[in-house]
Image (tube, rainbow, N blue to C red; front, side, top):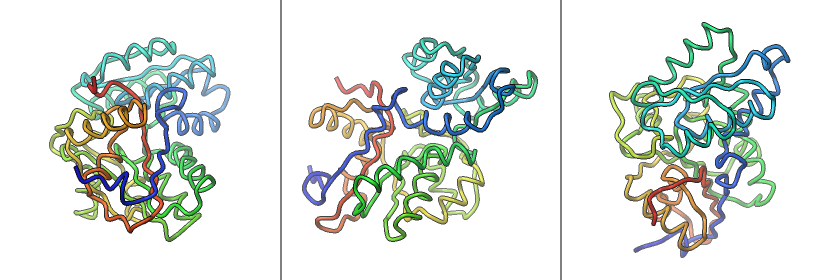
Amino acid sequence: MHDPAVTGCTLELKLECLQVTGSFKARGVMSKLGLLSEDEIARGIVTASGGNHGLGVAYAGWLAKTPATVYLGHNTPPVKIERLAAWGATARLEGAGWDEANEAALAHAKRDGLTYIHPFADEAVIAGQGTVALEIIEDAPDTAILIVPIGGGGLIAGVATAAKASNPAIRIIGVEPVGAPTLHESLRHNSVITLPSVDTAANTLAPRRSDPVNFALIRDAVDDIVLVRDEEMLSAARWLWQEMGVAAELAGAASMAALRQGKIEIPPGARVCAVVSGTGDAGIS
């Protein structure tokens, strides 16, 4: 297989899969938690998630010793529900995917006076995710291309904003599943659109709709968005495991999938950083 990831560039991996909850999500949640009052924290926190953000909220609840409730779609892997319980959170299944679960979470927060922590459409959360880029630039200031998976858009909005502020010449490339091209289609229409449906096993990259706050930041700072198929993410996850000993879920391997399939133009010798956003069982055995 033509493999520009290992032959055409200097490749670095940002292993967010090694974060305490298995993804970058704890960054954004802790950023938000730091802005809440003691009373807001004491009442409890609630969210909706494809799994990874929920784990970040569960971790924050555990640290703050406050109840955390996480709404999930029925497409959430059981192992993530088990891990939520291990952190002491209450998991509630609602609807087929994130969008339906989010409606239930918002209703719960409003009814019980709880703080709702959005997984991507919150400036504090976006700022927290942006610390990923700050670390990349600090460690490798000559990074020319940064490849970032896209779910709702919180990670890439924060990363792109922070990276461009440090180096306006850096190229930011987003990656979405073919079956959930939420931001790709929004940019094509120059407005936030709602997909009629999604069709991907990478459930953490599969909201049907982003948000204007994310769309505006992505439109201004992201250079391109490419699409990958589920089988390409699975192949990339297997490559990460076999070559690097890194266990990544499908979403976590999306950046590597785009690289390995030659979907991003890479100048010879360029330093490229691919964000491996989350760990988990991708069926690589």
